[in-house]
Structures are given as C-alpha cells and as structure tokens.
Image 1 (cartoon, one colour):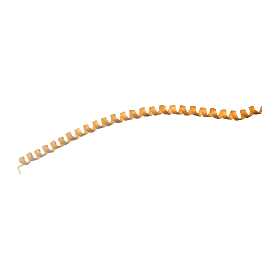
Image 2 (cartoon, one colour):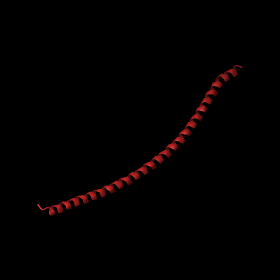
Image 3 (cartoon, rainbow, N blue to C red):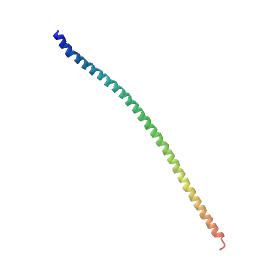
Image 4 (tube, rainbow, N blue to C red):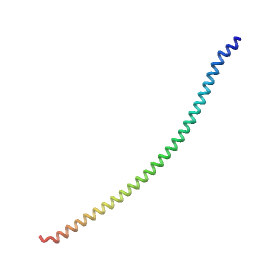
Length: 98
C-alpha cells in the first residue's frame, strides 16, 4: 500500500501540473489566433485609411489647382481694371480744359 500512496502523492501533483501546462498552451494558441485576426483587421483598416488619404490628397490638389486658376484670372482682371483706369485718367487729362 505504501507504493500506491507514494505514486499518488507524486503522480497527482504531476498530473495537475501537466493539465495546467496543457490549458496554458491552449489559451496561448487561442490568444494568438485572436491576435492574428486583429492583425488582419488592422491591415485592412490601414489599407482603407491609405485609400482615403490618397482620395483626399487628389481632391485637395484639384481644389488647389482651381484656386490657382482663379488667382490667375483675378490677377488678369485686376490688370485690365488698372489699364482701364489709366485710360480713363488719360482721357480726363485730354478733356480737362485747364
């Protein structure tokens, strides 16, 4: 009987430790699987954000081009107004009887 008690005294804690190790390995593998899923979702989100950034950059570039075009047109218009003002001043100077 003494041998059975010795085997139980040594075997039961050993079995408990082995079961604990097995459960830890299972938990770690489950956590790794969940983290892999999160990595894939984060990569997809990063791709979507990059696409959004590219679209926004292209739209901002288009708006900048339109503003530059308007600025050129506005400068041309200001030049024409100044030219017209100079012409009116010269006409007034010719018509002034002083």
